[in-house]
Length: 234
Image 1 (cartoon, rainbow, N blue to C red):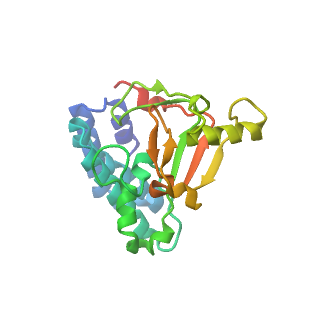
Image 2: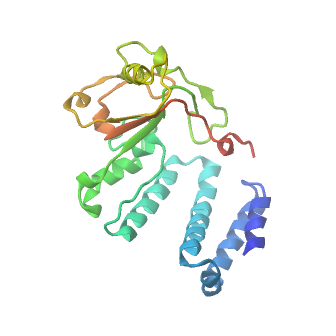
């Protein structure tokens, strides 16, 4: 299987050659199931098979920038993983827009977190769903999943004193004994105060939101950057 994987990696995403290489890899994974499971083990075979399936479903979505179909893949994959996990804890790593349990930010569609909140009976009830927003006191962001030009965002310490992002940053900076946050922070949003609308800034522009309507907690890092793989122009 190594030559097939190498063939996929050697082709340029978005080209017919890349699509053909991924399709051939998927065909071999199916036709050589028994021998590959023996070589790779069931766990790694399943991971590779799932990754290839996701890539095949993603090819046409990237071509037409279909955010609705993209979200559907995330929802399907998450529900499948939750169903297979029985009573185990499942951690789903997605962007914060995808994690919001009530639609507020981003495009008009049903987000992953929103779908899970509306279908919590499938995994034991809403009390088993915990949505965390990860963001940064400083750093850079992109505006959409097709964006290849990250831009710096205003630091939390530069926001008005009434902005929740600034207030959290002030507390962390004092804790760190510095003029700006140097460590990460965790903030549980279960206190009733977070059900009120207040100014907050996750990225470029401030907004007014009731934090606990979208998330159960925040994790804020001192600085965030965009992965090199996302910056890359293919």
